[in-house]
Length: 439
Image (cartoon, rainbow, N blue to C red):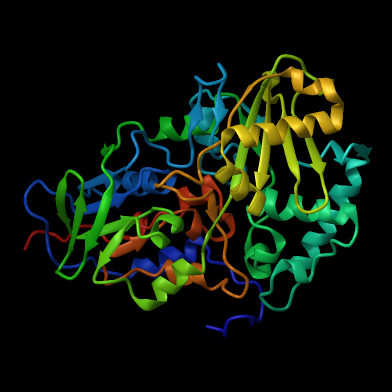
């Protein structure tokens, strides 16, 4: 492995490499007691559901333990609050031509529509500008960051010296990667794949994930508090008792791992502890607004309000001709507004509309909301972003521990990091060897 901050070329933790690394790993030689699972999966998000499905197909006894009262993790569609499907978490089917949910969704009757997020409208404060200027500046910035020869904060190579450049930096960093440019690793950005083509789902991406997870052996409202792996297998301690198994697949977020929400006995190896610290969670928060008039905006319009000082606000306007305008804030601003609370976040978004469309625009808002990922104890953020100089942390955290602890999730998804589709294909279950034949 090259020293931190140096590389010979772009490093990608691909799924093939991950599975190859796990493929030669034998499970700990301690069969569970009768009726207990061979493998415990922690978390019923996309990665956990994928691991369970794969293990079942291999004939393994498996159980998924989920702390929340639903499956899907950070993929969740809310149909009640606004009377239409609203994706509280992930919404775009990124890399749709290779996304594991695309064909499934089409086969099961979900309504998918292509939608990229090049801006159609942009404002610098109250002044409307040509959105193509921001799109072009973002593309130029992306090329500069990807060409960096060492693992630096992206702010050191991105030109944000103009208002348009600053807007492009916020759109690329906080509103895409969920961290500001000074917290974005150039190598982490360069290793991520181009996610085009992109699709949106009328019924919500969370609905697709929930549909695909039907019938899997999931125990809801069962948070895992600790994992003991000092014996021949693992002992998983939950609020509902203990389970013994030969192995555990851990799909909880790096935010939960860093915050001590899941304890290990003995402690994880130092390399894994450091990797967790080097993969903090970024923040992308949504501020949905239910509108009683459209402000002249067409369905699916991508709109950016750019302000100096990294106070930018992006709107996906009226997807699928609904009355929703879905605001996004990310990075430090996303954390700040999440801490301030729902009322403050709604006010921030409404004032943004007033700034762009005049004083009466606020009257067009019937109600609003704020997504809860910052305060949710089972996520503690949106998705993981490697700290500058610490890109190698992704590979380090993906290494199995003691032939019995395996990690999966969006933080381990190679070029599809930070995506739901990437979380699904990160599953290590396919690499676990089949059960030993009876002796």
